[in-house]
Image (tube, rainbow, N blue to C red):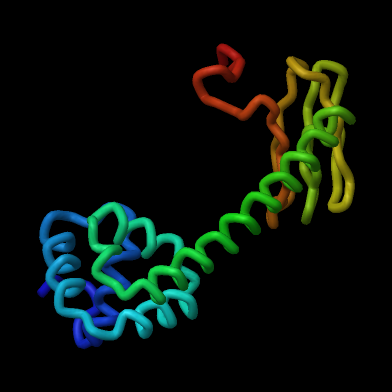
Length: 172
């Protein structure tokens, strides 16, 4: 038995192991062992639902060729919950892309949520406070700083996505 979730029930241990992003060989072996002896698949679905891990567990069990071990009604439950979550995520992604598209069309690069962000540009310096946004043209030189001791929280919109490989850094 691995050190993951010691003292837990077999169903709880299976949930934890099936939720791992990259289980090692020992964890995978234990996952298979637990899946082959589990008799409370409905309990696993309920536990995964409560812990918001249904799609993750579903994917892992399919990837490990263990999904077929559960009774068809429980498989259907996993399918339904995973589908509902996938649909909700697709709607969230579409909404986020719409907002990002509006930001890009308006030229908004950064929205300050809390504190003050100092934006230095070729023409001077702007102090951008909570609730304000700054617009920078694509390719315009800017530098952000947070001179106040409490810092700032801000959302930077980078379209296309920021990448250290493509950013234009100053030589200094």
